[in-house]
Length: 314
Image (cartoon, rainbow, N blue to C red; front, top):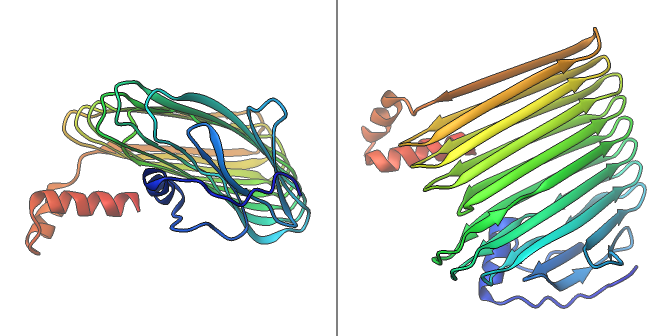
């Protein structure tokens, strides 16, 4: 074990942000690393999960030992000061035959006039026969004029017969985000991505995925559901590349409202005769009969819209 610092130093705003992005109401059991305003705010490691600070101070390395089952690691980041701009590099090394949950996410509360920005670069190295669920939530709040900016980059390297499920969520308060995810899968590896996104005001959101299916019987299923309100703009750009006998599917399903704009660019590249690849994209407004039906049950038009959106993004 190393850097085992159990003390968690968070103020009330930071605790609220932690709750929003990591669903934590108290310090979790197991391994964790809390980062607040570019400083370490608390850390704990276990017999099977070690967390080490990088020598150059740019981030952390998470090591999960072989055969680790039913354990979790939480690594949320919060910014509550205006004007902070940081880039953090985190590497996850998941050894063979594991079954673990990793919860990340970033919350920014900006009440000042300067922009606050967190750029997180996460690299996953998933060894043979391991299963990982990864949850990443983004959230923004604060009444300042400074922007809340999040630019996550994710690199995924999956060995034979490994499994990774990624839940990517951004529902509120982020002014600008550019998310780019790349993945390389070996034989029998399986990647599942479920993205949920809502933008409003003048927010901008870009989501890009590039998945290379390099091994026989590798597979990927990348699905995004999004809602663009008011004057916001979204772009979804997903490319699945089949370099072997494999299965790939990408889907974008979006609701557009007010003056929102959505650009969906799903693409497929088959470099093997037995690569089976499918893409789907649908953009539309909320059906009027859905709203009328809910209004007959006593809801206002606004309440009906919110109910439909909540169900769509669930």
